[in-house]
Image (cartoon, rainbow, N blue to C red):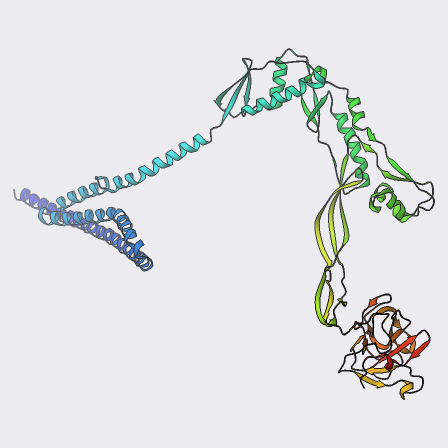
Length: 586
């Protein structure tokens, strides 16, 4: 009995130890769950705080910008905050209730009850009416629906449809749209009405829309061929020949046409290796199909027509005394055009009886030759006039000579039968810019004027600036050195020299001991001479008026120091100029 009792006691002790160990394990699990819940709550609280701070910063920014906008925006933000935070708040509250229930049940009913309530809350947290699974479903369901709807729309938009064509109750096939049939009808009219044919086909088309199966629709040429094939008209397989879009007939083989056209362009390609060669007319001879038997034409005849000449070449027969320039003038062509038709025309002298081509033959098919040319082109200068109060009224002087500019051009020039029809400049480079010509127009009121016939004794004006010039050497008649038959007037180097009276310049240039010299003929038997000039402002034959600047003081020729030598002459006779001046300044 004692032995049995001891066994029972030992078993009871073991059970108590086992219960104690299990209880300790369960307690550890409960503590772990409690800590896990606390950590989750802390995470959500941290997120909520960060979200709140961000929203607060944004709110302060908006408030600082606009009071009117703020009130409306705060309502929207508040609604958005509630919308975003409410699931988090519900989760936090659920976790807090779960933690409290677990602690209360563990304390009052033991660990088993605590575990039971913990699993209950976990099930509600995940699968309850406000649980994570339901919340995620509520969020995901609309997104899935939108994606599904988008896929349906995309699928429907990618569907393609085509037109079922039936003519005279006979199914021909599918076309892209109704216009294909009407284009085919025009092609049929071209083929049937060739050379006034009275053939007629009665057509009643019918159209229906069907979903496309991905196969290629019929072209307008295929539709035209099928209609002809199903009609009672005699047709043959051939290649249609179209000139500028107009049907000219059909040929059984289009290769001879291709060869003939290649031979025509080859001549131009040989003469202009880098040119772009093309026909001026639009040619189409590659469209194969069924054509009326009556529209079939002989291929050789068509080739002979295409390679024929409309107008023969024209020539000019060189006459005695003709030159390159005179031939250009007589023919009305440019040297460049004549060089294109006659190699070396501009570089050789023509001879009597020579045939100069002035018009190339005009072929049935004209050919465009587009050549790239480089050349220099002069750019004209502008002329600018301005007032100058140092010149007398009516007097003009070129102060800056105008100079033409030069541009280097690259152009694509198109010739048809060696006649230029277009020129398109593709690039331009300025070699030298034009220099504007500047012309001074006098505004200074001139002194009393005397005509050339009136200029004479006591009528010439002082030929230099009054107050800035004086006589530096008298004539031999008045005590100057022997042989000095004029007066020397000095002012300063470069001082302007004026015409003593109106007249015509008969000398302007170097004149031995006088150096740079101007002589004016006044038309009444008198001439005036102005010597030793540094530079001249007039030229021979120029009409000048009294007081006009004609030169500038200098020391050219036999001269000692800057001055102007002034004489009054009549043929070989010389007169004392002091007697011919209105005023004299010593």
